[in-house]
Length: 508
Image (cartoon, rainbow, N blue to C red; front, side, top):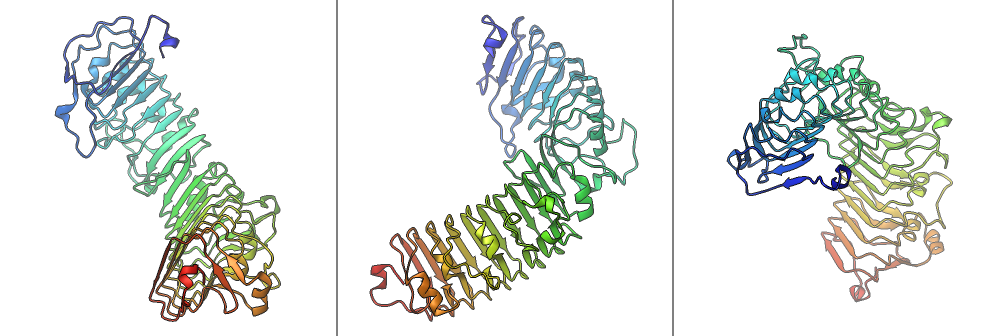
């Protein structure tokens, strides 16, 4: 910053200083940047007595200031009214009074109240015609933003709000003096490109739709929405038709999509988006009681031949009617999960199989697979008629495999899949009442073709628990070698016989 301001002008920084009070008037007429902070406070143990006290006269002789950062301070914003050249103001973790005095800072472009304490944004702030960024994240005591205030920030490019504060649409519109801001005011911000927002669907106008944004984290009907992605939607308990209309301008760019309790939706694609969510990196779907199929390719046109080329993480949970992940044609150009690294499927009680062989072939980057509480599951990989997969190497990057509480599963993988599991490090199978073998071939000669000695060269951890019908790891004429095994646990497997000396040789 010093280079930009000139060699003779340096910022002053007193962050986390031992100063308890700034009752004196600081005389620094040429100072352009000031960073000032008291002892750090946590929201759960906020102690106002430990905040840096700032007097109303403190900044009176610092009128050249352009950038001010105050952290963990207690002050009236009347103290800043003299800083008419100020462009950036950061108030972090502060206890604030007299917010309306900021209206005099008409050159202000960046205004952050992050984690600060105050109850209302006054209507006087509408005088900030040059405001480009407004950050209200962590303002837990904020109760009101006056009606029509936000729409007057016509130059606003970035808006950050974590508190659900917008007026519900059913509430009759009130005056500026008593009314609260409405979501429709965002339509009057033509420069807005960054939006972090948490809202209730009751605040959504019927004809409202979010515009194109370069960065966004939008949470609807949820108390939280965690994502490292800069383009994230976390949406709960909303009808599918409203979901489609609201976010249609964002689906082309969304990277993280979390859906919970969506009603009236039998498939995610094409119901949500016809074009395939092609930038999607993480997809989580839970508690959608009507969902029967994740992707119905039979309803997608040829122009959407490559779906989910960027999808890396898939989480499906508590979907009682889900019957399949993919339905329709299995063109190699259409089945594209080549970036998928992590899959979790939990408590999808109608799901009979996880992947078809066509989909399994595309899972070249899959590293982690967990399947829990899927009571109807019969296959992890379903073999289509006339396609036995022999001679192929698939799932070669898989490292962690966990199967629990899948009571109808008779085996984990076909035996030909085992030949490709060269990176498998952790295998846990628990509480599968019908499981007879971990790896299984349909016929004896099929196993012979694959070779009698199948190695899992990197398997370090093996757990086999509560498997009442398990008799072997493979079929009778086949065994595996586990040279890297470090941890082996077996409980409640009454029919599994381990030959004498087998643990010394570490093979089954």
